[in-house]
Image (cartoon, rainbow, N blue to C red):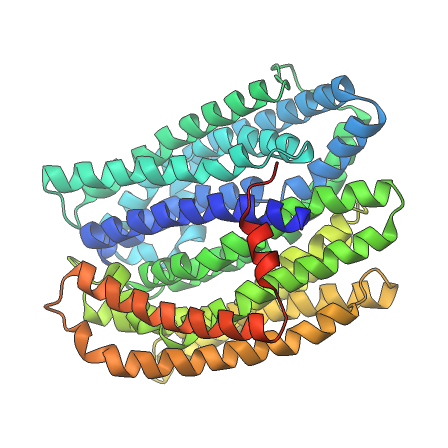
Length: 526
């Protein structure tokens, strides 16, 4: 249960962050809608946010944590601190060059980030401006990521899991300022949001510096050095970032293709925000906690503990992810209507965004399974195998997105759906390849408890779907567009409550989890 409690710590803080994130996106949808200003901001935010996800939510740590943990346990805290300082110096040096080059070449980069924007010069120019404002965010996140990995290695997860709360809070304040001034779907509103991202990066950095001081691991700034440990980090880190960030790379590819269709970038963004809630709470929590746990167990030679950690992680992930994915797939319209339909975001936007969300949801279990299986490779310092599988997945996703996008557009259907379908299929392909290799090598064997509980989780999820559909049908008349937000939110909460109750009762009756386990899971770890 200690592993579950760590999941709960990270997942709980991530849930709080996502709640703030939804509040932020509700305000953004009301002020920017899905027009050209919204598309420009989404692209500007997507580029640094991609790096935030790659570095800040586990991908960079896949290479850094095993080396840092080995230094910490084998050579002591001082050796680990010096390695972290060398790694930080190298990161700062490389990303400073990347940032300067990107700032200067941004008009040319925009043709790769959003090739369809050049049709509307005003939209293209605004995207260039906003992305230039947000670029320095990368420098802050490189240090934040490294400090997060160091803190996670010593069992401190709260600070690193809280950084997104800072980002969402600052962006909410910026949106309220825009609304107070009176900006609505205007370029000035996008500019204010971009500056909010800039400011949030430095505030997040201050939070992690405070956390490092509390942990007694103050890091100094030194000149970059090409030490053997740094070379080892680079050798592991490049494939680790690619494989660990496959989900975000898939989304980035989808954004590039979606720029060819007006409004599609925004629709994908809003759907992605909803779909990422369970992915963040479960997948990221599992990935962050499981990697250092497995690395320590492997170093101690405790293969039985490694196998148990992997089985319990997969069980925990599926227990939460399968019902979440099915709920997003069967009542997406209700969810999107309550969260975003107001102001500049109309019923037509709800229909398209909900359809995209339903397709994204089908791939949710796969992307969480990737977070479960990848640490088994990273803890053994094997980042090349996940990178190869991520490359195969990305290639399939890119080809599928392009093909389905133009096919559906030719058929007069929503081309955005093609991107969502290809993303989901690419995730399942990647998850299968990771699982198949681990099973073949004997590094993952499903135990009797997992084999028993997965069918029971599926059964409980199917019953939950039936309850959701029935409740949604009964309550659909109350979603009238004249109803206020709190009424609609209460109706949605009732729907979800009914489905969650059915699922929980069946989980308890079938013995997948007991009341005692639930109590220990939610009890604060001493």
